[in-house]
Image 1 (cartoon, rainbow, N blue to C red):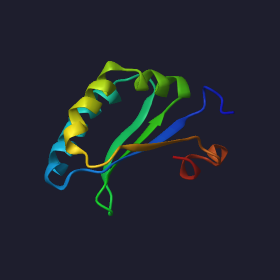
Image 2 (tube, rainbow, N blue to C red):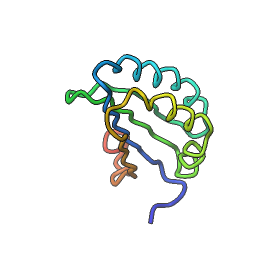
Image 3 (cartoon, rainbow, N blue to C red):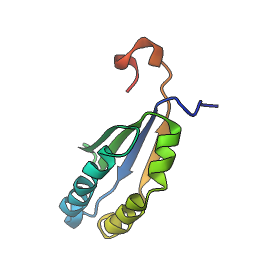
Length: 108
């Protein structure tokens, strides 16, 4: 089991409706500054993937910080805001680094 104080990385994948891709990106972009102010947020970055999805990469200082983010009213509001812009359920994967002791190049 992962310690509660170990950094956590989350990769979230959004499949935008073709006609709503810009709307989805704008909704996510509007939310980024608020997340950057949250305690423990080390990275919260939106990417355009080659397969047409929009990928959000997050890094949190600890699982507790991620849990606090997941329970925030802002995240629930974002979910409601983006609902009309996505063509498929959003997926996410939560990960912890395996090689963090080798330095930043070995662990996001």
